[in-house]
Length: 242
Length: 393
Image (cartoon, rainbow over all chains, first blue to last red):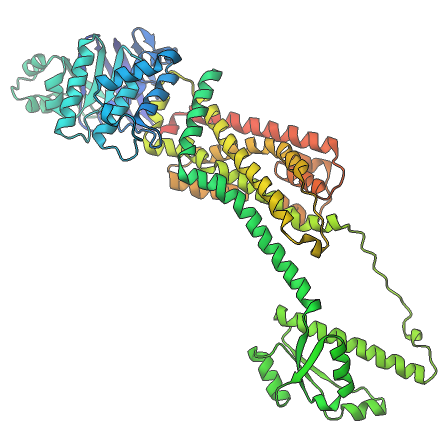
């Protein structure tokens, strides 16, 4: 479970995140939706601990990401935006490297890697060096890498960016699988349809603030819009600009 | 802690062993570049110094027939007179345009002036700005001066005067430099080749650790893992050190082999570069490897991209030469305080070793300790920088 309480983060004069709060429960998919520059990535980066918040609190399974960041990281599988692989290592070696760093028992690493290769159906290219992989292949390997230590919480930053229809579909299936295993999945996107098709809860972010945090039906009701896109636009307008 | 550092280290080593660019710079560029350049310089200077003495010089002479004795004397000095340009104007023109390097002009009155014992003019046309031609001109000038001295002695003797009257001073130069000592001047530049080889060997790893990971997008996933950033940076610096050490060892060994094939004794040099010196150099330079690795990582961590890092690191490649250069130019003798300066202290110790001079144990100890301390401090700064948020760019 991921909980964010009144998070603030500035970069110089830019106040990127201003008081974001939401909760992503286990066994559900939570979507962080918002236009470019809304503060989605910054919020997620605080969650996977590469950034420190100026104020507010974020916890992973009740563990504070600032004061106990190593333990929090152990419980997260993170797929940052545009995650890159090591081109001279094979897909399998990329995954195994992360497994070792995530304290997976050395005796179990091979099994874990095989499991994850099977789960994500990347066996066809798992033994090839990742140089020259397609965007879809890269994303899957990066995801496999993030999942190899069996984290309860999964954070994906715009995972479907640059993927074609088939790759997006199979990514969607994987995310559903993870949810059905009882994990907490939090992912960001700026594509309303994608979020609507997948998420149980949607947190619409604009201008560094939460506009609406509800289920799809709840959002439709509160904005008074039937069309998903209209509802999205309306919700964003509800947040007053600076 | 140690296991994680080792995991990072092992991955970086594997990754870079598969990278052709890193391999080329670590295993080929550094180790080959030094000996090849060195062999080139040595051979050039050997060729230059040998050719002066051995090769006979063809000297165009205007008016040979006016001084047959002089021509014969020159021949005895391995300078062969050949027909020159028609007259003085043509001779000056020939030297100016570079057709001839040196032309000797003997006027018609030469023989008569000698007989009358008045100074007989001869003219030597050369271009003193042209160092190659000047060497030949100097040879001719020297030959003419000794002919001059010889004639003077003969005249004095004929008049019953001891020729030694005209030599109140007898200047005798005693050169105390040993054969190994002379070689040290040239071999001094070797130190830099080793430093260069080491830095080249680790350069791409240092870039990859910071700017490379960031540009590839692999830094953020890495930082989100349950490992401390100190562990990451230490593993990466350790891998950088390994490649630097590898490159330097190869460079030392290739020098060890290459020196056997260089005719250094012809230059009066007998450098001491046996395997024992190779080993000593490795021990002395080992702390410097840490300094180099940390320094390159430090510089690369400030850059925004791979290319920018490459540009800045080429500056780092030159930086270690500065102290060596300054001390060489000022021809300063090794002093204890120099031993606190990385690169300079290693250079001075290596030169002593190559010259076959005893190594000052205190100097060696100061060099090792102070370089290690500086290396550790730089590594600490690297780790601090790796913790800041700006690292993500």
